[in-house]
Image (cartoon, rainbow, N blue to C red; front, side, top):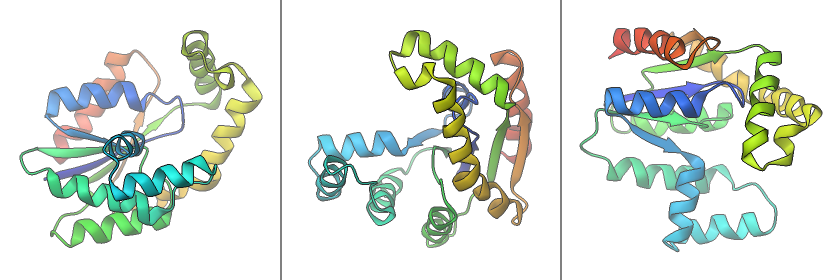
Length: 191
C-alpha cells in the first residue's frame, strides 16, 4: 500500500488536488479533522477524549490523534494507498507515523509539497473568504499569521522526509488542471 503526504501551507490547494488524486488513483483520504468528527460522532473512547480537550479549548494531544489514525489504518485493507492531508504537522507526529507504518513493514512513499507564493496564498484565501463565511479568511494579517505558523511549525516536516529522499516539490500555481497534471507526473513515478 502506498502512503502519500500531500503537503503545503493553508490555501495551497491541497483539498482540491487531494480530491482529484483520490479519484484517479483510488486512494483513501485521511484528514485528521475527518477522523475527529467520525470518532466523536461514534462516541468512541478516543472521540470522547478528543471532545473533552476540544471543549476546554486545548489542542488534542498527539497520542489521541495517533490512536484514531491507528484505528483507521487498521480498518483499511482494500485500498491502493492513502493520502494524508493535514498530517503530520510536526516532526514528532512524523516520527510516530513512521513508527506505526514500520510495524506493518510500510513507509511513507512520498511527500508531495505544493509550492505557492505567499501573495498567491493570500489572494486565494481571501477569494475563498468571500464564500466561506469565515471572517479569518478575509483578514490578510490573520492569513499571513497562519502562514508564519505553518513555516515555524510544519515546514520542518518537509526537511525530515527530505532526509529520506521521498520529497517532491510541485509548482502549485496555474490552473487546477495544470497543477493536477504536475502532481500526476510525480504520482506516476512513485506508483
